[in-house]
Image (cartoon, rainbow, N blue to C red; front, side, top):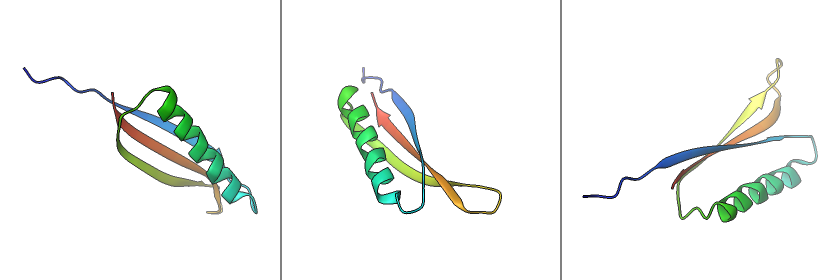
Length: 70
């Protein structure tokens, strides 16, 4: 019989501050890479980023969704 695969999703978030975005994106990358290493993830299915906005439409945060196989 074929091996049954399991898929999981993990969400990472960060607040974006003016003039600090590159540092915050690097920190988000580091957070995700630590997770991949700690969980010994061998296969990433997808990574998706989307922004969050306030009531004026200004970007105030980022949500990164990681789908991976376990």
